Image 1 (cartoon, helix red, strand yellow):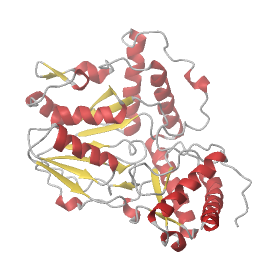
Image 2 (image 1 turned 135 degrees about the horizontal axis):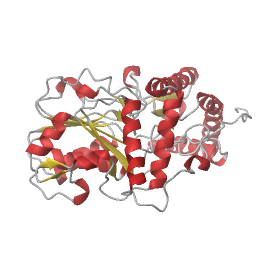
Image 3 (image 1 turned 180 degrees about the horizontal axis):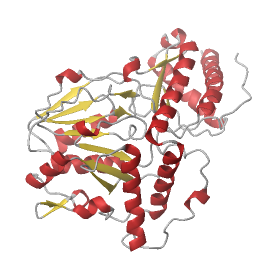
Image 4 (image 1 turned 180 degrees about the vertical axis):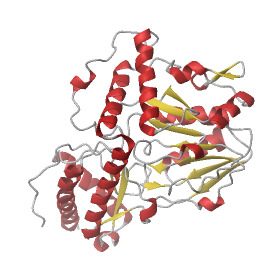
Length: 389
């Protein structure tokens, strides 16, 4: 039996969303929140514009691209893009995890586009990117939050594409470098890499997406929450912080705090370095482990934020599927009971395993402290199965 470790992570929050707050965060960080005031007031608009301006600066988003704060988290941002932009030409949807599957269902079953192609791959792999046709619109996730797989950069996206490249970047923005010249649409939520609060999304539109909005009228009714044009022209105020619905000014202040933290540690370079360092720590531990492996076998496409693990111990793999699935759940439950790691069970639609958030707000030292606990919990779970047998 493994000895129960003594050292604990300083912060036990390894959830993949909402994610851990930035190091040093306290409620006092929100003292300047504009509470009890309208988001349409002059200071309210200034706060919202500050989120947009700081986002542009940290991510290096060119002035040619417009940025909006939108309702309903990343899901709302993606839905706005799909319902507003698709239908002008055929569409390819890449699906290799649950959210890509959701966008494929929207395209095929809700919008009912007649010329829709779904390029699929199992959890842990990518579809064949060479099969993507950029004469069509293309919908894809940069990073599969529920599978731990990311695309290998942006070279596969055609620079001379005729269709739009529509990218769900929710667990990639602020952790991975996004090629803005190759993306016509990008979306994410505040609750991911900078550790903000849920319910608010970000939508970035390049010039080609704006042109599509102003030239294409969808064949379906457009809900108010999705409308970005009026009289055939872009509603420019949306991209200056004049939000479609009422945002939480407390969450807005928290987003500003996260952006200021990002600036203070060195901007995007530092954020990417922290995420890659965290992944390297997990990779070093997995290399030593006799029981844990990556769901994403290909190192070139392995996520540095939502790191998904599977059980590879031969004795466990020899068990019936139900017993195998019980092991990671037991590990997650043991570590939650010990207050060592919260919310690390795999996503509900993903294969059984563990999912450890390694984004920029996670300290590498906390991961290093977690690894002995993972080994201890696995040993406990395996022993419990042996006793039950």
